Image (cartoon, rainbow, N blue to C red; front, side, top):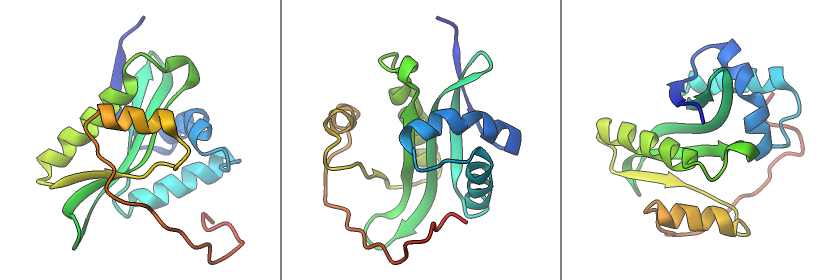
Length: 150
């Protein structure tokens, strides 16, 4: 196996190279350019995207953002964590999560927070093994039938 490098995504071209892997996690993202536009817009609000590169191919991603609230104080919220189907079981998810955790610590954040679906038993097992504990439930109300990513 070739070396996998973890590098921040900073350009539209790098972001476009991430689409296929992100699409595995977010299949509702149908158009690559729409994905790129949204990620670039989110980056202006603090979102960061870390890519795991195997040679010239993206094989994993961690999308996250530093934020703050009264519950957790300063924390990093992991929006997206995905490893391509053919890259799973190689420890890439753990490497990505460790890199985000280290960055959170360097920013003096008090917590690392993420959500996962109630039916995602394998993901939940992975998060428990990584030291994350379930502390609540996430509630959502859809306010519009239109896509909010436009």
